[in-house]
Structure formats: C-alpha cells, structure tokens
Image (cartoon, rainbow, N blue to C red; front, side, top):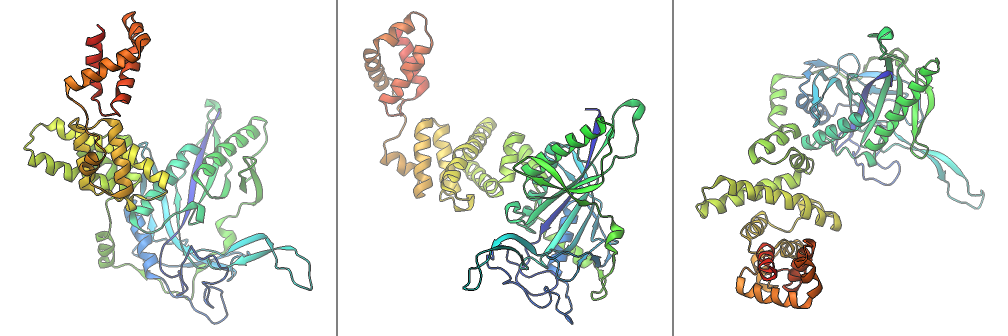
Length: 502
C-alpha cells in the first residue's frame, strides 16, 4: 500500500463506583428495568445541583498514575454543549482545558509503546432503544417506537485519548485488550464491552509513503464511533484504511466525518459531519468548584496501586523462567496467575522438605504446573463455565499432583483422570490414586508379561515391526497402555516391547 495509516484511539470506560458521578442514584450496570436508577439530578430537573463523586476522581487519577501521566494539581469540570435525546441536560459535564491526567504511555505486550494524550472524567449519557415493541391496549394496535433509558445517564465515565501512534487494526485491538486488563487490575472498571462498560472509537487518516509526495502533514481524519468489541475495532479500522486508500488512488478526497460500523456487512457507513471542539462551546461548569488534588491524596492513591500487568508479565518470566506466552496467559487470567504462584510456594516447601538442591528439578516442577494450569485446568474451567476463583482444588493438592507426575508415579492419562476427579470433588490426589488404582506400573517383570500378551494378540503388527515399520511399535505401545488401563510406564513398556521383538 502506498499510504501510511495514522490511528488515534478514544476509549470510554464506565467506572465501577457505587453511585453516579454527580448524584446518589445507584450505578448498577446489571439493572434490567428501564429508568429505575434515576433521580431529579441525573434527569436534569430545574433547581437541582450536582455534587462531585470523589471516588470517581480517585479512580481516574489511579489510571493516570498507572500510565505514568502527569496529574494536574488543579482541575475543573466544563459543560460540553450539544443536543441529543439521551442527554437530559442538553449538555454533558465533562473536562476539556484541564483534565485530571495528561501524557503517559501504555506499553503493549508486543513491545510497542502507545503515548497517551489525556485521561479525563465526565458523565455518561442515557441509552436509546429503537424499534421497541409497544404494549397492546384496547385502543391501539401493536406498533414499534424509540425509547430512552436513563439508568446509565450520569454514570462516571473515564475517557482516555491516545496520540496517533497506532499503526493497524491489530494494534488497536492489542491496545484495547491491554487497557481493559489494566483497568481490571486497578479495580476501577469491569470494562465489559458486551455490557457497554467500555467503548472504543478510532480516528483514522492516511498519508502518502511515495517519496516525492511524503509530508509530515496528516491526511483527512475520519472517526469511527461506538465499536463494541475488539474484533469489531480491528475489522472496522482495517476496512476504513482500505476504503480511504481506494479513494485516494482514484484521485478523490476523503471527507472528514463520523462513521459507524455495520458488523453484518463488514463496512463503515457515513453518519454525520465531524464536530470540532469549538462546536461544543465548552465553558467551566458554574455549579461545581475547581478540584485541587493535594499531595496527601495522591500519596493515598499511590499506596493503593497493585502490581500492574506489564510488571507481572516481566516478573513471571524472570522469577519463574516460564515463556513470555505462558506469562501472558497467567497475567490475563489474574486469578489463575495467583493460583500458580501459590502452587509454586507449595512446590518450594516440598523441595525444601525433601532436601533437594538440584535447581533444574524446581524449574521442571514450575514448568509442569504452568503447563497443566494453562491447558488442562483452563479446559476444565471453560467446560464448566466457572471462574478460577471457584476452583475446588487447593494449591497444596495441585502441587502434590504435579509431584506425582514428576516422580513418574502416574502416567499422563492417569494424571488427567485424577485431575478431573479433583476438579469435581476437591479430593486429595493420593486418595483418588488409591481408590481408582491408577499408580503407574514400573515393575519390569509385570510389564513383560503384559507385553508378551499384547504381541501374541497382535501378530501382524509384531511382524510389520520386524520388517522395519517403526510405526508398528507405537501401535503396540498403545495396546500395552490400553491393556494396563493407562498405568504402564510408557518408556519402560516401549523398551520391553523392543527387546522382545528384536
């Protein structure tokens, strides 16, 4: 492509405070009834006055600190004036000139840095419900109409704006996922895109890469609004890049506008001309005082900061010597990552009690526990639709299972059987091992008898192996495992079969 895309993102996230931004109506995203969590203030009744939600301010500042932003000591709210049915006041209380946070960087797992321009706080709008089925009465036939649900109006809404550092739809998706993870680690927002708690918008422009046409000036900017999934964001951005490139190749101009995304057609569509900041006629909110953040308040917020995702990924790789890919999985699933660390602590206790000084043993145990958690345990959780917090297996019992596997006392198939039973019942692995008679057979004499029976029952496979077909030996090993109900030591069994056949 002869054009370089320049992409900036605007991401809105609803903060998980108990009450709304400027009143004491409940902030409950799970409310299904329309217009339940409303009051005269969030419905903009005459004579009502807003009061700032301090918890929302603290949570916004916490995000800024996590991103390395500069926190403005003095900040204030402003009125953003525009009319829309879901905006009861006819304006939105937001921030423009002095946001709480300016600057900062979000480092992506891929290694790329995306600069942050600002993080500010505002109130959310209501929600329009179109094509709603009206109730049938004796006086009218059934018909459809549009309604407004104001439950969401006034909910604290954090807006983050990036610099135009994003290079593709895939990178926009990666940024959104990393920011969502950060918000959840900080505990400031559930950031569930399916529930509208996090919404992404993208500003896209193209500039020529042809040497004689190169310019520092960016192309005409097009905004795509209200992308409600990371997949949709990636697809919409990639489509828009191709659409603009096609127009430019034809010698046509790109129109500055706001566009929507049609998931079914996989295309963006024109909505309206793009507004500029002067169109909103910002001015300071006269009903709210300026906010001065004292050093003691910032120190209090800093003291609440948890370990952040990027730091955790880096620590997992360095401290436990696992792969970056495994560290990413255990970071994204924070509860599973915490369970992993508790398991390692139990394994370290076992190593200490057994007086093992061989460092590679510890590393093998850690790698084995990470593998089983990421593959087998996650599969069981997904099949049962349970979160890691509902795991009935204690870290101590899981560590015991890992040790049994490491010592060769159970086969991989037996390990899966025991793990499933542990997952269902929470029982101790040693108890399940005894109850189901799953101990691995490592006795050469006993395995030799079973191997002789397997050869006698499969003469053709034995003959094929003698003729040079190596895969026949694998078949016989499989039959040996089947005959022993998965209890045979597979390596010992293969050695015995090879000796008998050779």
